[in-house]
Length: 100
Image (cartoon, rainbow, N blue to C red; front, side, top):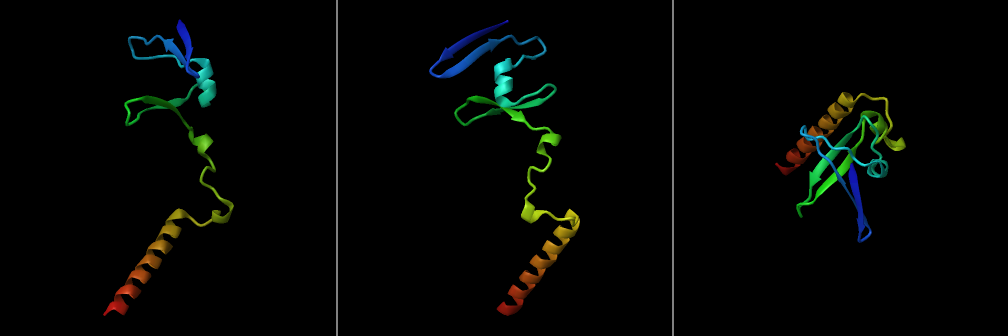
């Protein structure tokens, strides 16, 4: 059972909440947010006190999210970190040796 209201170019819908705290997200909002069942949403409170509902991407949706063609490598992350630490250490040592 839901009640729909449209005011000031925003849509609102009242939904029932069960005694277990469960509520059904109306279909048009699920479609708008890209939420598929089963899925997850994030409830976030803004500084103004408004509550925002956001879609949480699944691991399969995130696959390749941070991949960039220029950053593609077959080198394991642990090796990249080790190389970066060595580079930082060498730069720091060089900095301190020139200050003496």
